[in-house]
Amino acid sequence: AAGTFAKLRSLALAQSQAADARPVASVRSAPTQNLVCTGGWSGAVKIWDASKCECIKSVKAHSDRCTGVSWAPDSSFIATCGADGEACVWDLKDDAPRARLRGHRARLGGVAVHPVGRHVATTSFDHTWRLWDIETGVELLLQDGHGTEVYGVAWQPDGSLVCTGDFAGLIAVWDVRSGKRIHHFQGHSGKVLCLDWHRDGFHVASGSDDHTARAWDLRRRCEAYVLPAHSSLIADVRWAPASGEALVTAGFDGNCRVWRHRDWSLLTDLKAHDGKCMACDFGPNLDDGVLATSGYDRTFKLWAGGDDGLG
Image: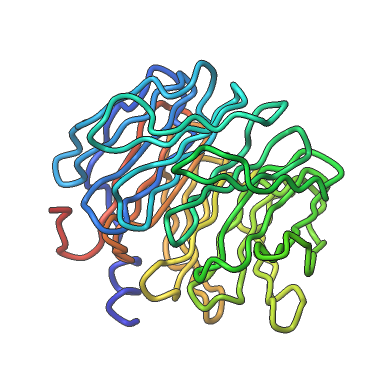
């Protein structure tokens, strides 16, 4: 952990790239390859070689804004969602989608590939979240247990539970096997816009337009900590994937901040983008010492700590 903290404290800009003709709302790092995926308001989704910051694939994924991207656990494909009401699954080697997931009646807020890699969860402004079979494109579950727009979505690492967040500030936890809600958390005074599940399986992080990020403990069924993280809307939260020792938050104040999980002290404060910082993630190959960010300024950036390169 000491080495990870040292890298995070010394984060500096390593690469910056203009990524879209419009704001870049999504960025996600591949778990098993040195690749980064970005999704922009133009509807374009791009795959980047992180070592060179070069675009190696670009597809016009959606006819409206791309609102989310998610990698397969083996980095072989990505799932995307958009304001056009569709989700798509893309193999890295093909330019046509493997599947188009149609059924939502309004724009999509989030997308998350199941940890096993055979299913995808989507959230929507139609007040539902849905579970899809990637191979067949068939909708397996439609859950309308939210009373308002649903946005954030995240899988428990073992894939048995999924959490969803809505515009009323509610975070619901669902048992995928039964399709039933087993618990909910309420505490945000605004919309829940982003969620991420800790590798320990019982801590969930959330971000909201109430300017706070929060950690929730599913074992104790309570709020674990309230982090007054930014002076504006929090667009993304991500746990350090390898260690779980840190949480990164992205805010519309333009900042990206890294927090130590043990005591919630601030490790790093980056002025990441001109204008809104719209998304963040830790580095490719589950690297806790690298960050990826994207912003309203149409760029995505890679940040590295210590003497580490990105290759």
